[in-house]
Length: 276
Image (cartoon, rainbow, N blue to C red):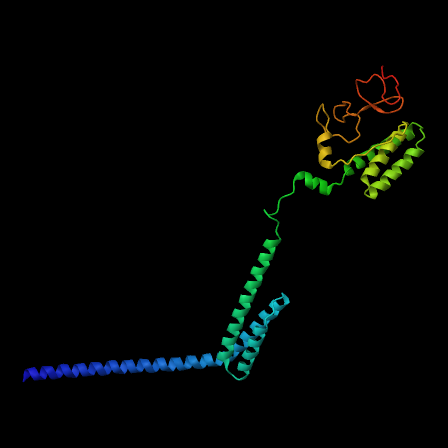
C-alpha cells in the first residue's frame, strides 16, 4: 500500500513538472511570435524608404559612370523595373533589382579600369621609361651657344665702354652690338655670338675677321671654361683669369689681330714678326 502511494506521488510530480515546462515553453513561443511580428511590421514600414533610397543611390552611381564614359542599357532597364516595382509597392523586389544593378555597375567599372591599365601598359616603351642624362637635360634647357652669346655680348658691351673712354670711333661696334642683342632676343644664338665677337673686335680697334661659330652645347662649355692655374670658372672670351690673373685667352697678332700660338715667331696671316 505504501509503495503504491509513493508511485502515485512521483507520477503526480512528473505531470506537474511537464505542465510547468510546457507552460513556460508556450509563453516563450508566444513572446517570440509577438516580437517577430513587431519586427516584421517595423521592417515593413521601413521598406518603402529603403527601396526609394536604393533607387536614388543606384541612379546617381549610374549617372557618374556615364559621365566617365561607362554606359549600360541593361542597368537602365533594371532601374526602370525597380521603379515599377516600387510604384506597385513591391519594395523587396525593388531592393533586389537595385542590388542587381549595383553589381552590374561594379563589374563594368572594374572592366573599364582593367582596360585603361592595359592601354597604359601597351603605350609604355619597352624596358620602361629611362631618366634623361645630365647632358640631355642641358641640351634641352640650354640651346646651342646661348651661354657663350650672353657672355660675349657682355664682354663686347664692356669693350664698347672702354672704347668710348679712349675716344675711339665705336659707331661700327655699336651697330654690331645692337645686331647681336637683336639676334639674341630672336633666339638666334649663333648669329648673336658672331655679331658680339665682331662688336668686341671693332670696339678694341682691331680689324674685323670672318668668325666661324660652332654649335657648342652647355655641357661642353662647362668642361672647357676653367682656369688651368686655379680652376676658377671663366667666361667664354676671358683673356685673363679673374681670380689669379693667369692669361687664358689665345694671343693675337699685333698687326692683324689674328690668333697666334705662344711659340709662333711670325703671324700665320700677315707674316708680321711676333718677337719682342
